Amino acid sequence: MGKIAIVFSGQGAQYSGMGKELAQCSEAAARVFNMADSLRPGTSMQCFEGTKDELQQTENTQPCIFCVGYAAAAALEEKGIKADCSAGFSAGEIAALTYGGYLAEEDAFRFITRRALVMQEINRKNPGTMFAVLGLDKGQVLELCSREDGWYPVNFNTATQISVACTVESAERFPGAVAALGGKPIKLAVSAGFHSPLMDEARKKLEEEFSGMTFTVNSAPVYSNLTGEPYKELTQLFQQINSPVLWHPLIQNMYRDGVDTFIEAGPGKTLSNMIAKIIPDALILNVEDKDSLENTVEVLKNAEK
Image (cartoon, rainbow, N blue to C red):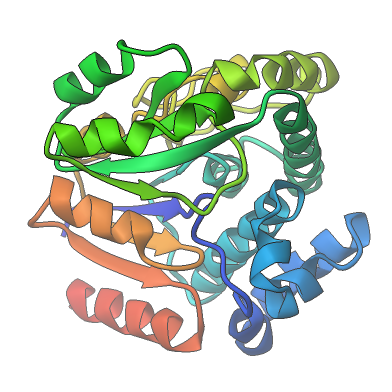
């Protein structure tokens, strides 16, 4: 068995009730939710009981996604399993940096809470939306997006799954253009045009506010959305806000560096499904509730024998 990586779910994976079982079955997970509630009252209740519409609002989604992912990792560590390295998809990257010890817990939670508010505020000024494009490769999507201002390729998830951010004005024309090339467009459950020039102002504001945040590069690598390689400095966290997520090369680089087991921490299996397409022979597990926690622990302990 090679190295273990833990990967943290991003925005769009949220659902009502997420994290509730983890808080009930793990003291370590419960502590994460208590920490969040002390800084942002009501966070755990939003995770456990929030409506679909409430959880889809960026100001709520990001803090809640952070809590569930980080709580899942804490529950796993409580069971004696610590990953060799980590990464997180978009907002999930803040949980990865916290797990890796690059950011202090409370600093990280304050940052993601503010990040969510700023992004929602900027989206009101520069509204956008996002689509997943299935069945077209990187070259085709880049060529398609070059045809019109307001179409930005932003998440390179797999070889033939790429997300595109669109301005509201241009979004109506995008699905038809994708279909004409033989691709399949799917509107994502997010409320802004993330990782695109629509977020330039958000990056500037957050960098001004948090450039003094303590950041410690540790021995367990955290792979960056911005470069696909291990994190080197805090500025990458701000650059990530208005830059594409290089998930496909990031996972390939983890595999290159000896990772053959991936554990998704947080709601759903979106990242697990992506990784299965990128590294078909990898062992892929997830932790989002009591059953998945117990299954992951059992599989890993048996693998060590």
